[in-house]
Image 1 (spheres, rainbow, N blue to C red):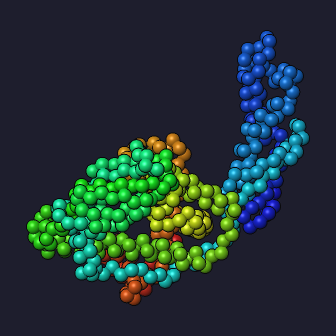
Image 2 (cartoon, rainbow, N blue to C red):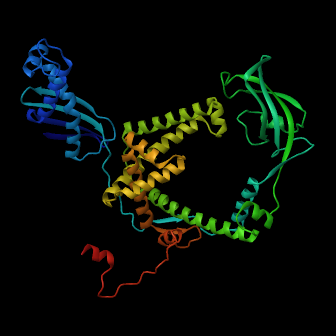
Image 3 (cartoon, rainbow, N blue to C red):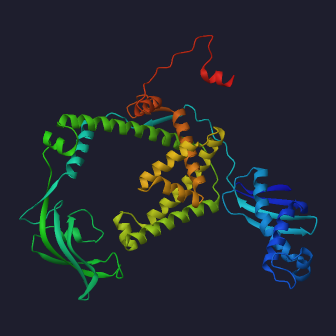
Length: 464
């Protein structure tokens, strides 16, 4: 087999592949067997029709077509490996010549990963947030904990922002009650930002026993998008009461006996979280710094596929929410135009990130061990709330284990970038990622000693 490559653009090539007929022999033998199974010839059992009879009765073209259908995709894969290109789309294949008994020729146009060089990333300076834990950080965590243990107490007054109301809701269009737009004993926090526009404004000032109607656009069901009269009947008004911040609260909300012990635990956990954030930021910022130095042309088909996939996921989310399209975007305080613009920018960056990280994976010779793959599956299963063996089977059955391994090695490539960078925090202090790894993993940090004059560094010994 002989393959020639023509560059149509920085992101698209045309392969011209010439294949001697002898290399088609396995596919041709399989083609004869397949055709023999499909045809019926008097005097021969199914699958036992000789090749010459098949050609006489049905023509050699039938066999050749079946042969090419089997052989060309395999030959295309071999050609791609031979010329060392990285396809990112399905190829447009055309058989351009068939010299029966001698050779065939086909062309394949395909979008590819563009060629580019990754600049040196050692010593790149990146800035991360400080890991210093302030009193405000601790107070914020405590307030969140108090919110979780808050109680609701009924009050004899009008509802205000932050109060909870117990209410019945129903909707009418032109005076006709809409059955599916009714709800009873609904608990709702006034000011929470309902997708039902006008609800918060209507509730403020209402007391138990009050009824009020307001016009709004329905957000779900068969009448989504229609204007309706929504009638509110308030049953009760309740205010949120936060527990006192004392030792008794510490015992209620944690395993600690005193408030000081709880605060110290929160401070330590906050510091640990901030250290982890520093690691993540170092890797992401080092990657962003590298991306700014590289100009990569992006294959149009790959970019379109990425954008289309994100739009498809969005459509699925909207359908699952049961909301109208407008209500969905109001809920997330955005618009379809803004979300689509995010898709365009995010898709372009995602492609560029993948190309760069794959280059680093190759140059650093990064791989995935069986234990790393197992750890990945277990961690992802915990996030999804499923059993690890169920997720592993799903990945294997859907040919997604390769995608999982790609994700693992790309994360490793990010780690390489972060570890190679010079990291400082927002206060100008040096950040030692290795020390953070050791602290997070509970290891003792060992200071590295300078080697003796007659002793080579370990990395030099490894190369010797």
